[in-house]
Each structure stands twice: as structure tokens, then as C-alpha cells.
Length: 127
Image (cartoon, rainbow, N blue to C red):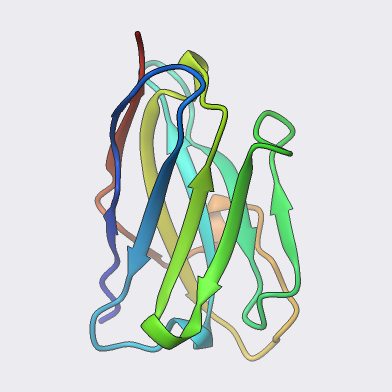
């Protein structure tokens, strides 16, 4: 069974940067659609970004567009979420999600479309 492991979260000052990583030990993430979601206290889980299997199609929420970048590191079997110009409202638990797909160009934007989830990594943006 696919297990996802997030890493890279932490405490950062406003304006700072973090890079989150999503790993799937024993599985090839190239065979999966991958998404990053986040959930802040008292709020619903929301899509941050997603990436297609071939890495050419991505989507971002309006709140992070221009500040966050999702990418695949195929040689390392990882999916990254580079976060820059962080704001206090970015504070949340960030989750990696994956779903198998035969379609190379699809990017899934709904949480219900993902079968596998990581346990999350906390990102706190505060001075």
C-alpha cells in the first residue's frame, strides 16, 4: 500500500521560504498524480497545488499562485513544494496526496480524488 511521507515543515518568519518534500518509499511517484493540500485550525482542507504525472501540468490555488512552485524530482522519486514569500495565513498542516493514473497530463484538484495521504507536516509562519 502506498505510504506518503512529508518533510520540510517548520517555523519561518513572514517573507521567508521553505521547501516541502513528499516521498513514497518503495513506490514510483511518476505513476501517480500528486497534490499538496493544507488545513489550518478551524478551516477546511484546501488544495494548494497539484502536478500531473509528466510534470507538465500544474495547478495552484489563487492564494499561493506566484509564491509556491510544485515540481517533480524524478531522479529522487520526490515531489517538492517550494514556498516563498510566506505569510502568516500560510500557517497550516500541509499534506501530500497521491492517486494512480494512466493519464500523463491530468492534475487532480479535488481532495476526494486522491486515494493516499500522508500524515502532514506543520508549517508555521510567525515573527
